Amino acid sequence: MKADFWIDTNRGESKTDRLLTLLKDRNVVQNFVHIVTGMNIPVTIAGTDSYTDGKSVTIAADVKPEEFDVMIGLALHEGSHIKLTDFDSLKNLTDWAQEVDTKYDPKFNSLLKNILNVVEDRRIDNFIYKSSPGYRGYYQALYNKYFLSEIVDTALIQ
Image 1 (cartoon, rainbow, N blue to C red):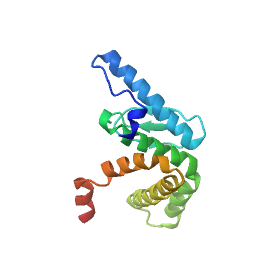
Image 2: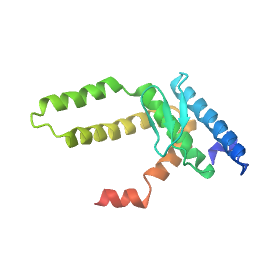
Image 3: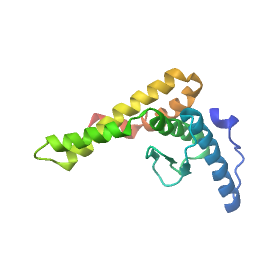
Image 4: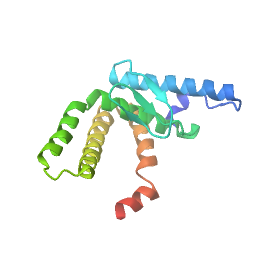
C-alpha cells in the first residue's frame, strides 16, 4: 500500500482512538486535495458516498485502513473535478437538453448527467494519471476497487 508512508496503520480500538484516526485521515486526504487543486478545499469524511459540489469534497467514511490508497484515489479524483471540471457548462448542457426536449422526461436528464459524468471522470483521471505519475498507484487502487469487480462486470454484461 502506497499510503503506508502517510498514515499510522496502528489504529486503536477506543472511541477516542477512532476519532483521532479519522481526524488524521481527513488531514491527509485534505493535503492531497490541496496538492491536486492548489486551493484550500474543505474535506469531510462522512456517509457512504464520495463526491464534490465543486467547492468541497466529501469522502465516504466506510473505507477500511487497508484501502487507504482507494481513499486517496477518491480524494485526488474529487479534487481533480474541482480543478478541471467546468460545472457551469455541464449544468448548462443538461438545462439545454431539458429546453429542447418538448416531451421532457426527467429520466433522460438524469441519464445525460450520468453519461457526461462518466466521460468527465475518465477525462480528469487520464489528465492526472498522465501528468502526475506519482499518483498512479492511488488511481490503480481506486479503479481496482470500483471497476475491476464482479458487480461491475455483471452490470456491464447485462
